[in-house]
Image (cartoon, rainbow, N blue to C red; front, side, top):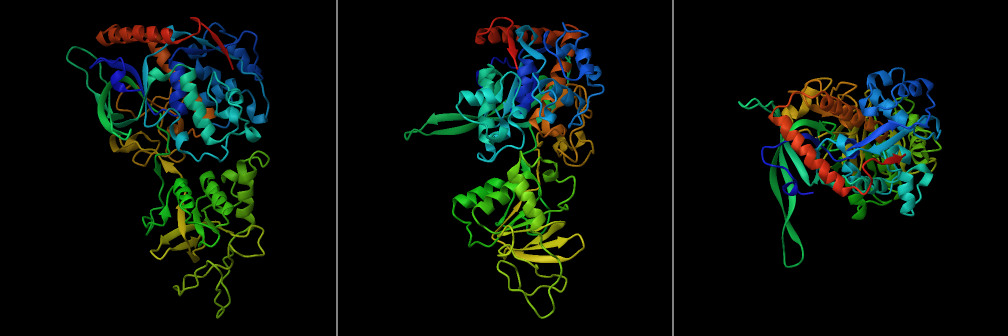
Length: 547
């Protein structure tokens, strides 16, 4: 795992460096390590047109086929065509609840491998290691798995049951870490690394082409102290690569509202801060309400966590509860009962904006009834109302936060302009997150679909070629992006980005670009890397892995 232990000669140019060791980077490493998908001779696909296309050249691997041709006519829940294709091949008709066997057969062919290095801040699995450990994941368990190792089989070996066909984030994180070990990918991973810059390196006078320089720091354990502990240190590194893949995900920097008082101590921007407050015993049924801002699944998890403690909850969000774009309106009730419960709470327990009669100040528990400007009106209901279906909860649909005040009062405003002041113990702003692309010029903004705006998964992903995942506005050739950075938030679809990139790299390798000095260096790396792979594999030269 230590970069200084890698077989990298100073000045040597690596074929591929992947920045990010979450499921995106892991899946791409799997494909670049020689694991190759073919159409199984005895298999069939429920889509007759796709099956017919795959059967036209059955001797060719999927990496050698025309992906754009195979994608024609396919439809799915992703806007990326290769993601729909690969998902259809790995999990045929899974959207309809059907359990077709994948028509793909996986062969380990080390001669096809492309040497690469995967950089990540923590252990393999990325942000999954930081997620709350007991909540169930949104996706079905088989949607979370990577090629070659069924999640349910792995969990059965660990004597764990997947509840309701879903797993917890802790289980998923452990699965991804085990996957890297099971597939003998460890030698490709350098963990504890933080990339600080990615720049275009000009070619030399000897005729070598330009490449990418990746700089950063790697955390290493220092000398052991007398008490058995050790002091960690950060060691700088610098790598050269012909190709760089951006696979960092988008969970690094919590999104902010940009309103007055948002930096006050009682305003939090992550679910983990709520967990910490709970563990410190700061919240219980006697606390002032917690204000949760946002209508995504993390916000719903926060509502459930606070509600479980009988801590009163105010829940403010911009959308209407009937908005089709609201995630809760897209989830099957039977599969996601806890989120259906939150949606019921949002719908049935709404704040009513009608102002009270003059002269009748409402001194309701937990609500602000202090003097306010004439434009402000106190809430007309309370989260502790005994007549409610869900006591201790009150939603504020189509509201935004105007300001947080030092006395822990929050000013909310409806879309009609009516303002309400609420007294809270804590406020959790859970409205998504942005990727940390500080290692790129201008934080990568120039790479987005909307240049000059921050990169976000939904509103402004990195613009890539749909069939190769090459970054359209990169400073030079050989930059790719995948996963949430290009708008793919679900593991089942980000695997398509890995296929697109691996296919393009394999095509460039087949076509060749002359045998200059750098190509000879790459060949030497390939020979050395394949030898290492063969020595660490217990399988035969070519083995078939069934899905």
